[in-house]
Length: 109
Image (tube, rainbow, N blue to C red; front, side, top):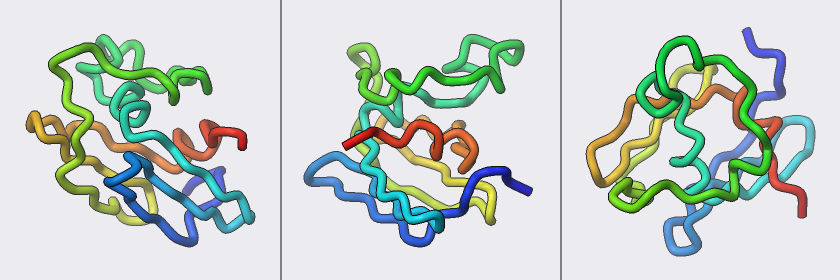
């Protein structure tokens, strides 16, 4: 079960490199895809299992990964009511982004 609201609508805007989520609490959030890749919650990207589950600073959603790490999105799939998984052009797909991770990172407009 999640403590955060669930998404009502999810759109991937590849042209503008955005993940757009309309949440059931009425929030409308545009997450930059490079930032989504930067905050990847998998053990490899977080620097080991001991770092998983630590809060992600909201400003990190505006950062860009190091050169050689793809921000070109190939696909995205829902993972039940839990979250979303992204498939990047460099083959990386290990991060499962729960709604609890994404909702607090909603960029202010």
